[in-house]
Image 1: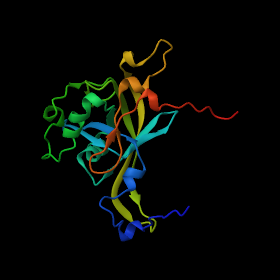
Image 2: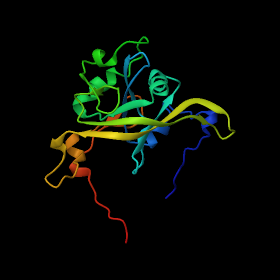
Image 3: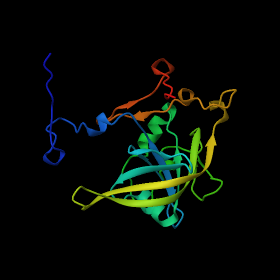
Image 4: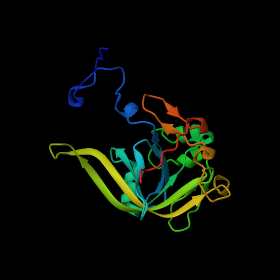
Length: 207
C-alpha cells in the first residue's frame, strides 16, 4: 500500500484552503476569559489556545495573538476568570468573539449575567456551570526559533477559587464531564465539537 504525504514548511505557506494546524491540534478546550481594566471596565472573550498546565498549584493559561484587551487588562490588574463554555452557551460565546469598539461590554452584548467573584474583582458568567478565579503568575511574549519576539502573548494564572455547579458532581463527588456538555474548538473556520458517553474509553496507567 502506497501512502502519500502532504508536507510543507509553515514559513513558506501551507498551500491549502485553510491552515490545517489548529485543525490537527484538536479538539481544544475554549478559554472563555473574563477580565476587567484598571478603570473597572468588564471584558469577556474566547481563546482557542487554552489549557491546564499544572496540578498543584493549579495553573491554566491561554495565548492571545496580539495585545488584546484581555491581555492588557490582566497585565494591569493581575486577575482573570475562566468560564466553562457549554453547548447552551455556544451562541453567546461566539458573540463575545466579535471585534467590538474598545470599552463595549461583551456581557451585555451577549445577554449574559455578570456575577461577582469571591477572591478577585473580576466578574464571572453566571450562566456558566464552572468558573476558575485566577491570579496572574506569568505573562510571556512568545519567540520564534531565531529568538525573535512575535506578536503573541501567553498568559498563565494560578487558580485560587473554583466554582462548580453541584449537579455536575455525582454521588461519589466525581465531576461528570459529559453532563456539563462542554464544546471544543476543532480548527477550520467554524468547527466545534461536543463529547458523549458513547465516545468514552478508559485507560489505566501501567503499574
